[in-house]
Image (cartoon, rainbow, N blue to C red; front, top):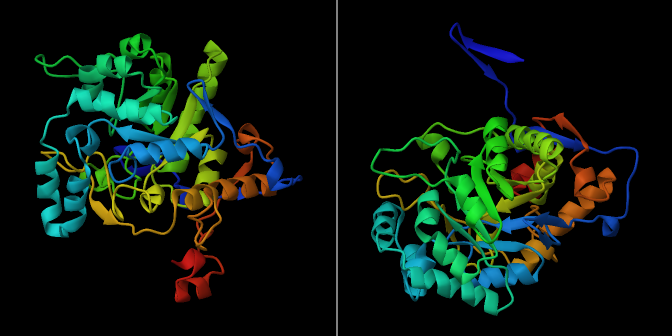
Length: 387
Protein backbone atom coordinates (compact mmCIF):
# COMPACT_ATOMS: atom_id res chain seq x y z
CA UNK A 1 0.00 0.00 0.00
CA UNK A 2 1.30 3.44 -0.91
CA UNK A 3 1.80 5.96 1.88
CA UNK A 4 1.05 9.61 1.26
CA UNK A 5 4.08 11.75 2.14
CA UNK A 6 2.27 14.90 0.98
CA UNK A 7 -0.35 15.89 -1.56
CA UNK A 8 2.05 15.51 -4.45
CA UNK A 9 4.10 12.49 -3.36
CA UNK A 10 3.30 8.95 -2.32
CA UNK A 11 5.77 6.25 -1.31
CA UNK A 12 5.98 2.50 -0.83
CA UNK A 13 7.08 1.10 2.54
CA UNK A 14 10.45 -0.69 2.29
CA UNK A 15 12.04 -2.99 4.86
CA UNK A 16 15.58 -3.55 6.04
CA UNK A 17 17.12 -6.80 7.21
CA UNK A 18 16.85 -5.78 10.90
CA UNK A 19 13.07 -5.38 10.53
CA UNK A 20 12.25 -8.97 9.55
CA UNK A 21 12.43 -12.44 11.10
CA UNK A 22 12.26 -16.00 9.76
CA UNK A 23 9.47 -18.31 10.95
CA UNK A 24 10.03 -22.06 11.57
CA UNK A 25 7.70 -24.35 9.67
CA UNK A 26 6.38 -27.82 10.39
CA UNK A 27 9.67 -29.60 9.61
CA UNK A 28 13.20 -29.41 10.97
CA UNK A 29 16.35 -31.23 9.85
CA UNK A 30 19.83 -31.88 11.13
CA UNK A 31 22.09 -28.99 10.06
CA UNK A 32 24.57 -31.42 8.51
CA UNK A 33 21.89 -32.27 5.92
CA UNK A 34 21.48 -28.64 4.82
CA UNK A 35 23.03 -28.19 1.38
CA UNK A 36 24.51 -24.68 0.98
CA UNK A 37 25.94 -25.14 -2.52
CA UNK A 38 25.17 -22.59 -5.21
CA UNK A 39 26.29 -21.71 -8.73
CA UNK A 40 27.42 -18.37 -10.11
CA UNK A 41 28.08 -18.21 -13.83
CA UNK A 42 28.58 -21.97 -14.03
CA UNK A 43 31.05 -21.95 -11.12
CA UNK A 44 29.81 -24.08 -8.20
CA UNK A 45 30.77 -23.08 -4.67
CA UNK A 46 30.04 -24.83 -1.40
CA UNK A 47 29.35 -21.59 0.48
CA UNK A 48 27.14 -18.79 -0.97
CA UNK A 49 29.39 -16.03 0.35
CA UNK A 50 31.59 -13.69 -1.70
CA UNK A 51 34.16 -11.30 -0.24
CA UNK A 52 33.73 -7.75 -1.55
CA UNK A 53 36.09 -6.21 -4.09
CA UNK A 54 37.59 -3.76 -1.62
CA UNK A 55 41.26 -3.09 -1.01
CA UNK A 56 41.00 -3.69 2.74
CA UNK A 57 39.27 -7.04 2.17
CA UNK A 58 40.71 -8.96 -0.79
CA UNK A 59 44.22 -9.29 -2.16
CA UNK A 60 45.77 -12.26 -3.97
CA UNK A 61 46.31 -14.19 -0.74
CA UNK A 62 42.73 -13.71 0.44
CA UNK A 63 41.31 -14.64 -2.96
CA UNK A 64 43.20 -17.92 -2.86
CA UNK A 65 42.28 -18.67 0.77
CA UNK A 66 38.59 -18.01 0.17
CA UNK A 67 38.63 -20.27 -2.89
CA UNK A 68 40.23 -23.05 -0.86
CA UNK A 69 37.59 -22.67 1.87
CA UNK A 70 34.69 -23.07 -0.58
CA UNK A 71 33.76 -19.42 -1.01
CA UNK A 72 35.03 -16.69 -3.35
CA UNK A 73 36.85 -13.37 -3.10
CA UNK A 74 36.74 -10.58 -5.69
CA UNK A 75 39.83 -8.48 -6.42
CA UNK A 76 39.37 -4.76 -7.12
CA UNK A 77 41.13 -4.09 -10.43
CA UNK A 78 41.07 -0.33 -9.95
CA UNK A 79 42.58 -0.33 -6.49
CA UNK A 80 45.93 -0.54 -4.76
CA UNK A 81 46.74 -4.01 -6.10
CA UNK A 82 46.87 -2.83 -9.72
CA UNK A 83 48.38 0.62 -9.17
CA UNK A 84 51.43 -0.46 -7.18
CA UNK A 85 53.85 -3.32 -7.77
CA UNK A 86 54.23 -3.71 -3.99
CA UNK A 87 50.96 -2.70 -2.28
CA UNK A 88 52.18 -3.30 1.27
CA UNK A 89 53.81 0.09 1.96
CA UNK A 90 50.70 1.80 0.58
CA UNK A 91 48.39 -0.24 2.80
CA UNK A 92 50.63 0.60 5.77
CA UNK A 93 50.22 4.32 5.03
CA UNK A 94 46.43 4.02 4.79
CA UNK A 95 46.31 2.28 8.15
CA UNK A 96 48.62 4.79 9.84
CA UNK A 97 46.94 8.16 9.20
CA UNK A 98 44.29 9.81 11.34
CA UNK A 99 40.66 10.48 10.43
CA UNK A 100 41.30 14.05 9.28
CA UNK A 101 44.09 13.10 6.83
CA UNK A 102 42.43 9.98 5.43
CA UNK A 103 40.40 11.32 2.48
CA UNK A 104 43.24 13.50 1.18
CA UNK A 105 45.71 10.61 1.41
CA UNK A 106 43.35 8.26 -0.44
CA UNK A 107 42.87 10.77 -3.25
CA UNK A 108 46.64 11.05 -3.56
CA UNK A 109 47.32 7.29 -3.52
CA UNK A 110 44.54 6.39 -5.97
CA UNK A 111 45.62 9.09 -8.43
CA UNK A 112 48.38 6.77 -9.67
CA UNK A 113 47.16 5.13 -12.91
CA UNK A 114 46.09 1.50 -13.09
CA UNK A 115 48.81 -0.56 -14.78
CA UNK A 116 47.44 -3.17 -17.24
CA UNK A 117 50.46 -5.40 -16.68
CA UNK A 118 49.59 -5.59 -12.98
CA UNK A 119 46.03 -6.64 -13.85
CA UNK A 120 47.44 -9.59 -15.75
CA UNK A 121 49.95 -10.32 -13.00
CA UNK A 122 47.39 -10.41 -10.18
CA UNK A 123 45.01 -12.66 -12.14
CA UNK A 124 47.84 -15.06 -12.92
CA UNK A 125 49.01 -15.03 -9.29
CA UNK A 126 45.55 -16.13 -8.15
CA UNK A 127 45.16 -18.80 -10.82
CA UNK A 128 48.66 -20.20 -10.36
CA UNK A 129 47.80 -20.94 -6.72
CA UNK A 130 44.56 -22.70 -7.62
CA UNK A 131 42.26 -19.82 -6.73
CA UNK A 132 39.22 -18.52 -8.61
CA UNK A 133 40.22 -15.30 -10.39
CA UNK A 134 37.10 -13.22 -9.73
CA UNK A 135 37.81 -9.56 -10.47
CA UNK A 136 35.90 -6.28 -10.38
CA UNK A 137 35.96 -3.04 -12.35
CA UNK A 138 33.72 -0.03 -12.82
CA UNK A 139 31.91 0.23 -16.18
CA UNK A 140 34.57 2.71 -17.32
CA UNK A 141 37.36 0.41 -16.14
CA UNK A 142 35.76 -2.59 -17.81
CA UNK A 143 35.57 -0.72 -21.12
CA UNK A 144 39.22 0.27 -20.81
CA UNK A 145 40.64 -3.05 -19.62
CA UNK A 146 38.21 -5.64 -21.01
CA UNK A 147 40.72 -7.05 -23.49
CA UNK A 148 43.31 -7.36 -20.73
CA UNK A 149 40.86 -9.31 -18.56
CA UNK A 150 40.06 -11.68 -21.41
CA UNK A 151 43.73 -12.17 -22.25
CA UNK A 152 44.68 -12.82 -18.61
CA UNK A 153 42.01 -15.51 -18.24
CA UNK A 154 39.78 -14.05 -15.53
CA UNK A 155 37.25 -16.65 -14.32
CA UNK A 156 34.44 -14.17 -13.65
CA UNK A 157 34.22 -10.39 -14.08
CA UNK A 158 32.15 -8.12 -11.85
CA UNK A 159 31.17 -4.79 -13.43
CA UNK A 160 30.24 -2.62 -10.46
CA UNK A 161 29.12 0.94 -9.80
CA UNK A 162 27.02 2.54 -7.07
CA UNK A 163 24.13 2.26 -9.55
CA UNK A 164 24.40 0.58 -12.94
CA UNK A 165 21.76 0.48 -15.68
CA UNK A 166 21.37 -0.39 -19.33
CA UNK A 167 20.02 3.11 -20.07
CA UNK A 168 22.90 5.39 -19.14
CA UNK A 169 23.10 8.90 -20.63
CA UNK A 170 26.59 10.32 -21.13
CA UNK A 171 28.16 13.46 -22.57
CA UNK A 172 28.73 13.32 -26.32
CA UNK A 173 32.47 13.15 -25.75
CA UNK A 174 32.18 9.90 -23.77
CA UNK A 175 30.98 6.53 -25.05
CA UNK A 176 29.48 4.50 -22.18
CA UNK A 177 30.07 0.77 -21.81
CA UNK A 178 27.48 -1.28 -23.72
CA UNK A 179 26.70 -3.85 -21.03
CA UNK A 180 25.00 -6.27 -23.41
CA UNK A 181 27.90 -6.19 -25.85
CA UNK A 182 30.42 -6.58 -23.02
CA UNK A 183 28.62 -9.64 -21.63
CA UNK A 184 28.46 -11.17 -25.11
CA UNK A 185 32.11 -10.58 -25.95
CA UNK A 186 33.72 -11.59 -22.67
CA UNK A 187 34.90 -15.23 -22.64
CA UNK A 188 33.87 -15.60 -18.97
CA UNK A 189 30.70 -14.93 -16.96
CA UNK A 190 29.92 -11.27 -16.18
CA UNK A 191 28.19 -10.10 -13.00
CA UNK A 192 26.46 -6.71 -13.16
CA UNK A 193 25.51 -4.31 -10.36
CA UNK A 194 24.47 -2.61 -8.35
CA UNK A 195 20.70 -2.31 -8.54
CA UNK A 196 17.72 -2.28 -6.17
CA UNK A 197 14.60 -2.41 -8.36
CA UNK A 198 12.68 -5.03 -10.30
CA UNK A 199 12.87 -3.13 -13.61
CA UNK A 200 16.64 -2.53 -13.57
CA UNK A 201 17.34 -6.08 -12.39
CA UNK A 202 15.28 -7.46 -15.27
CA UNK A 203 17.08 -5.25 -17.79
CA UNK A 204 20.50 -6.35 -16.51
CA UNK A 205 19.45 -9.99 -16.85
CA UNK A 206 18.27 -9.37 -20.41
CA UNK A 207 21.65 -7.75 -21.14
CA UNK A 208 23.34 -11.08 -20.41
CA UNK A 209 24.36 -10.90 -16.75
CA UNK A 210 25.33 -14.22 -15.21
CA UNK A 211 24.40 -12.72 -11.84
CA UNK A 212 23.34 -9.36 -10.47
CA UNK A 213 24.41 -7.47 -7.35
CA UNK A 214 21.65 -5.96 -5.21
CA UNK A 215 22.29 -3.16 -2.74
CA UNK A 216 22.90 0.58 -2.77
CA UNK A 217 24.38 2.20 0.30
CA UNK A 218 24.00 -0.39 3.11
CA UNK A 219 27.71 -1.23 3.41
CA UNK A 220 29.52 -0.61 6.69
CA UNK A 221 31.93 1.89 5.11
CA UNK A 222 29.50 3.32 2.55
CA UNK A 223 28.03 6.82 2.91
CA UNK A 224 26.09 6.97 -0.38
CA UNK A 225 22.77 7.12 1.45
CA UNK A 226 23.91 10.16 3.37
CA UNK A 227 25.81 11.86 0.56
CA UNK A 228 23.37 11.13 -2.25
CA UNK A 229 20.15 10.23 -0.44
CA UNK A 230 19.87 7.14 -2.64
CA UNK A 231 19.06 3.56 -1.63
CA UNK A 232 16.43 0.94 -0.84
CA UNK A 233 16.57 -1.19 2.35
CA UNK A 234 17.99 -4.61 1.61
CA UNK A 235 15.06 -6.90 2.45
CA UNK A 236 12.78 -5.10 0.00
CA UNK A 237 15.49 -4.63 -2.64
CA UNK A 238 16.42 -8.32 -2.62
CA UNK A 239 12.80 -9.47 -2.77
CA UNK A 240 12.03 -7.16 -5.71
CA UNK A 241 15.09 -8.27 -7.68
CA UNK A 242 14.44 -11.94 -6.88
CA UNK A 243 10.98 -11.50 -8.40
CA UNK A 244 12.67 -10.25 -11.58
CA UNK A 245 14.88 -13.35 -11.57
CA UNK A 246 11.86 -15.66 -11.39
CA UNK A 247 10.02 -13.83 -14.17
CA UNK A 248 13.13 -13.81 -16.36
CA UNK A 249 13.63 -17.54 -15.79
CA UNK A 250 10.04 -18.29 -16.81
CA UNK A 251 10.46 -16.22 -19.97
CA UNK A 252 13.95 -17.31 -21.03
CA UNK A 253 14.81 -20.54 -19.23
CA UNK A 254 18.00 -18.85 -17.98
CA UNK A 255 18.57 -18.64 -14.23
CA UNK A 256 20.46 -15.53 -13.10
CA UNK A 257 21.77 -15.54 -9.55
CA UNK A 258 20.83 -12.67 -7.24
CA UNK A 259 23.59 -11.57 -4.85
CA UNK A 260 22.74 -9.38 -1.85
CA UNK A 261 25.63 -6.93 -1.58
CA UNK A 262 26.22 -4.82 1.50
CA UNK A 263 24.97 -4.27 5.02
CA UNK A 264 25.37 -7.90 6.12
CA UNK A 265 27.41 -8.50 9.26
CA UNK A 266 26.16 -11.65 11.00
CA UNK A 267 25.07 -15.12 10.04
CA UNK A 268 21.49 -14.08 10.73
CA UNK A 269 21.76 -11.24 8.21
CA UNK A 270 22.90 -13.72 5.56
CA UNK A 271 20.09 -16.16 6.38
CA UNK A 272 17.45 -13.43 6.11
CA UNK A 273 18.78 -12.20 2.76
CA UNK A 274 18.55 -15.70 1.30
CA UNK A 275 15.04 -16.06 2.73
CA UNK A 276 14.12 -12.85 0.88
CA UNK A 277 15.24 -14.49 -2.37
CA UNK A 278 19.01 -14.06 -2.68
CA UNK A 279 21.09 -16.94 -4.05
CA UNK A 280 24.25 -15.67 -2.38
CA UNK A 281 25.67 -12.68 -0.54
CA UNK A 282 28.64 -10.35 -0.87
CA UNK A 283 30.14 -9.09 2.38
CA UNK A 284 33.06 -6.80 3.19
CA UNK A 285 33.54 -5.75 6.81
CA UNK A 286 33.24 -9.28 8.30
CA UNK A 287 36.18 -10.40 6.15
CA UNK A 288 38.09 -7.17 6.76
CA UNK A 289 38.32 -8.41 10.35
CA UNK A 290 40.29 -11.50 9.31
CA UNK A 291 43.92 -11.78 10.36
CA UNK A 292 44.85 -12.39 6.72
CA UNK A 293 42.94 -9.37 5.35
CA UNK A 294 45.12 -6.68 3.72
CA UNK A 295 43.43 -3.74 5.51
CA UNK A 296 45.40 -3.99 8.77
CA UNK A 297 42.18 -3.88 10.79
CA UNK A 298 40.59 -1.14 8.64
CA UNK A 299 37.89 -1.24 5.99
CA UNK A 300 36.95 1.26 3.25
CA UNK A 301 34.71 1.22 0.20
CA UNK A 302 35.49 1.25 -3.52
CA UNK A 303 34.10 4.78 -3.97
CA UNK A 304 35.98 6.28 -1.00
CA UNK A 305 39.03 7.44 -3.05
CA UNK A 306 36.88 9.48 -5.48
CA UNK A 307 38.70 12.70 -6.41
CA UNK A 308 35.39 14.58 -6.50
CA UNK A 309 32.89 13.21 -3.96
CA UNK A 310 33.98 10.35 -1.69
CA UNK A 311 31.01 8.09 -0.96
CA UNK A 312 32.55 6.11 1.83
CA UNK A 313 34.85 6.33 4.77
CA UNK A 314 37.50 4.27 6.49
CA UNK A 315 36.27 2.42 9.56
CA UNK A 316 38.28 0.51 12.15
CA UNK A 317 36.97 -3.04 12.33
CA UNK A 318 39.85 -4.64 14.21
CA UNK A 319 41.00 -8.23 13.86
CA UNK A 320 38.88 -10.97 15.43
CA UNK A 321 40.18 -14.24 13.96
CA UNK A 322 41.31 -16.08 10.87
CA UNK A 323 39.34 -16.13 7.65
CA UNK A 324 38.64 -19.82 8.31
CA UNK A 325 37.13 -19.01 11.72
CA UNK A 326 34.95 -16.32 10.17
CA UNK A 327 33.78 -18.53 7.33
CA UNK A 328 33.75 -22.07 8.74
CA UNK A 329 34.55 -21.79 12.47
CA UNK A 330 35.13 -22.72 15.17
CA UNK A 331 33.63 -19.46 16.42
CA UNK A 332 35.62 -17.49 18.95
CA UNK A 333 32.99 -14.74 19.31
CA UNK A 334 29.37 -14.78 20.52
CA UNK A 335 28.00 -12.07 18.22
CA UNK A 336 27.23 -14.06 15.07
CA UNK A 337 30.24 -12.86 13.05
CA UNK A 338 32.16 -16.16 13.15
CA UNK A 339 31.32 -19.48 11.42
CA UNK A 340 28.97 -17.90 8.91
CA UNK A 341 28.48 -21.17 7.05
CA UNK A 342 27.60 -22.94 10.30
CA UNK A 343 25.04 -20.25 11.07
CA UNK A 344 23.45 -20.70 7.65
CA UNK A 345 23.30 -24.49 8.01
CA UNK A 346 21.84 -24.28 11.52
CA UNK A 347 19.21 -21.76 10.40
CA UNK A 348 18.29 -23.95 7.44
CA UNK A 349 17.97 -26.94 9.78
CA UNK A 350 15.76 -24.98 12.17
CA UNK A 351 13.56 -23.87 9.27
CA UNK A 352 13.50 -27.28 7.59
CA UNK A 353 15.17 -26.06 4.39
CA UNK A 354 17.23 -28.75 2.69
CA UNK A 355 18.79 -26.39 0.14
CA UNK A 356 18.94 -22.73 -0.76
CA UNK A 357 15.86 -22.87 -3.01
CA UNK A 358 13.83 -24.13 -0.06
CA UNK A 359 15.42 -21.47 2.15
CA UNK A 360 14.11 -18.83 -0.27
CA UNK A 361 10.58 -20.07 0.38
CA UNK A 362 10.48 -19.87 4.19
CA UNK A 363 7.97 -17.61 5.91
CA UNK A 364 9.09 -14.07 6.74
CA UNK A 365 7.41 -11.73 9.24
CA UNK A 366 7.85 -8.03 10.00
CA UNK A 367 9.60 -7.95 13.38
CA UNK A 368 11.08 -4.56 14.35
CA UNK A 369 11.72 -5.81 17.90
CA UNK A 370 13.54 -8.97 16.82
CA UNK A 371 17.01 -7.84 17.86
CA UNK A 372 16.00 -6.05 21.08
CA UNK A 373 13.22 -8.14 22.60
CA UNK A 374 14.38 -9.66 25.90
CA UNK A 375 18.01 -8.64 25.37
CA UNK A 376 18.29 -6.11 28.20
CA UNK A 377 21.15 -7.94 29.95
CA UNK A 378 23.12 -8.48 26.74
CA UNK A 379 22.70 -4.82 25.89
CA UNK A 380 23.67 -3.62 29.36
CA UNK A 381 26.75 -5.88 29.46
CA UNK A 382 27.59 -5.47 25.75
CA UNK A 383 27.55 -9.20 25.14
CA UNK A 384 26.26 -11.24 22.19
CA UNK A 385 23.48 -9.27 20.47
CA UNK A 386 24.11 -6.28 22.74
CA UNK A 387 27.48 -5.40 21.24
